[in-house]
Length: 327
Image (tube, rainbow, N blue to C red; front, side):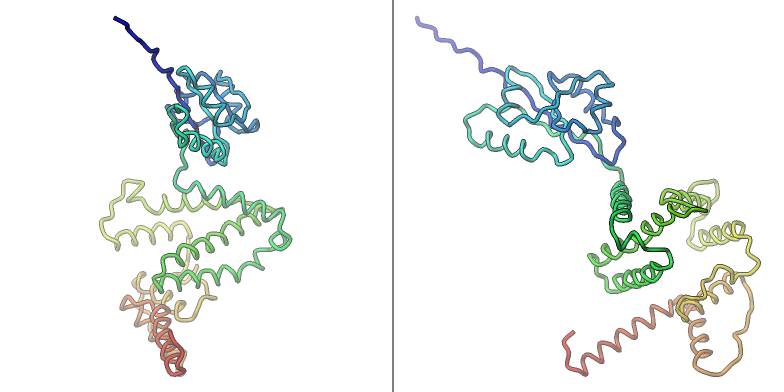
């Protein structure tokens, strides 16, 4: 009897494509990533300046600076070897495309391919990109490098109104874009503030300030206080704010430059919340009539500015209809 035997096909091995986020401090990798790096037969990285390399080498992991082709990588895995590729910021598209072509050809027994995220972006991580982009624009753009707080002030107002319009229109895509424009104003002003010779501060200082304020004014969330209704939350907020600001009048802190209806409503809100009995000033003319309407609207829980804008939009539509202009 003739017995034929064939040798088992060699193990094609394993390729691990290790991706990292530049928004997370280098060296802070997941445990599966460290395991894969320590157990690998070979670790490759095409970028000799990759921020992870010093930390990998400090951990005793040898990294070869190499840019293998797909064929080279498949060959390096032959015999059951594991090769980890530390991906560059672009994600190694040329390499992965080459591996896909090899696999599609059917001529090569492919190694197991694993995509292993070694670090993840936390919520808000893209804000770091915005800070970096703004820093570069401030340094290199002729227009942006000359802007001042005073020169940018009008844009903050414009962007705020455009945000309100997007909210009132119910346009989700526009809302997302306008929120970005408002956020840009904050980051831009913070970047300018870094250059002040007397009292510089950064966007981190801005964020730290609002974080501290929010925690302090939400003792029912971060402390032992209790608040079960929106009214109780507002009471906590106002009481804490009053202690912080040490104001002598409920009118302090109300910007007088805001639109008239909003100003009147804000004053009325402060008066009502404080439990004061302040008669409206006597006077004749449209201004006093509008003041009375704004106070009445605030008492009814209506934003007079929003109500007037809504009516004005209806008026605009009526004008366009009279003109025969399509909506």
